Image (cartoon, rainbow, N blue to C red; front, side):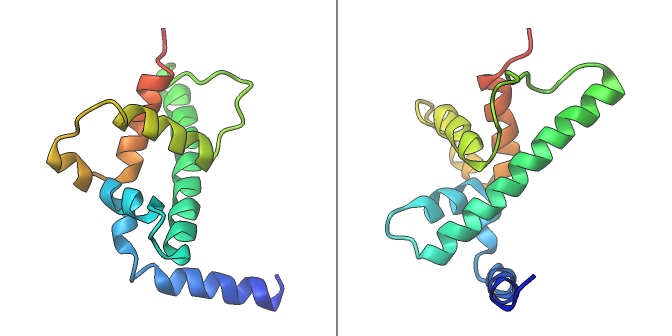
Length: 121
């Protein structure tokens, strides 16, 4: 790992304290706004990428333990932060959200979004 990469990681890790609300749906949506600082957008995207990976791995673990999936995504989809963002946008777009849902972690909202977008038959 080169020096610039290390410095970038240090900057991201140290700024997460400032940006801790990215863990909630509200924090994530705030970070996506055009007026948000670039570092918040980058951290939100990195965080969402990690959430996407953990949801895929969780789906596999649930399948191995219980024999069924949480969500059934087509095999041809290369899943990452962009796809999870699209699923969340599709879920929250038409739905008037209760105020308390904005405090829910983005991972939980992501899981609900994937369950609705890719239901298992």
